[in-house]
Image (cartoon, rainbow, N blue to C red; front, side, top):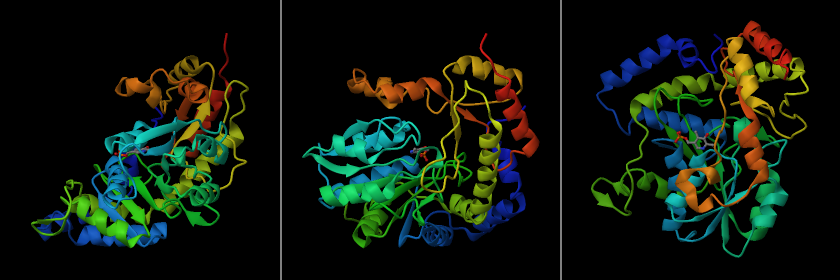
Length: 368
Ligand SMILES: *Cc1c(COP(=O)(O)O)cnc(C)c1O
């Protein structure tokens, strides 16, 4: 079977190094907030071309903590509006509502699946205080335009980079454009730990100092608490795993780009729409998402060819029971995506033969 994502195979490539790193942490006798975290934070900041990278427990916390820090710093207050794509993973929206801010859902562009300048501008009200662009599937949002709008309207920008480690536009990395960015290192992400982990990047000194306290009970100094903080730390074992994996991120991204290139050149079926490439920016292909009006039939056809696929995401946030207050809203483009998107196998370990099998199976798909 061609798996959607074979995590065991991905990590097996670094087995010895990961085990050595693990042993190093065990032998150190120091498991939280130590040298591994410091080393990883410094390398990841360097990678993202930002002044700071601050390790936290997961990607959702990264987003929650930035918005919380802006509240502590008096830049946001309860009831302020935050513009966010309607078609994102629910975590982006949870970070907003967790802080008692108001998510303003905006339809995506149907070629990039990201926010657009026009969409954001139409959603701005006197209460809008921030924009939360999500670099969905690994393609960076139009950040030069978004930063321009933010400047004109005095908005904060928080990038959701959970799917876009290393993506770029205009020669600048995802996570270095906004006032801050949240990353996830969930095992299935492009840079994946062997458990939960996340990070925040920023160039802002005041924000960084606030976040360093907030992730650790609101404390800068042991047993002295400036804020009612959280416990959201990136532990030494995961930091050590990430130090190993970060070294190989760019070569894994190149493999993903190579697979995407094969798919784009090989897939040729009028029933299946492949991603458009007339977009700015370097795509890191967290997911390769096609669209098909006969998705259930396509999934079945691919299963018959021993190919596993997934849907990102089958229920849009505004249709979730958790957000019953939004269930009456209508986002036709987001709902069309919810019904049509299908993610093909994508991983740095997918072989060319496997890739070709997927292409052949898709090209032989018909509706009867
Ligand atoms: C994975 C993901 C998150 C959350 O990351 P976790 O580490 O799972 O908490 C946030 N936003 C997006 C777009 C994601 O894909």
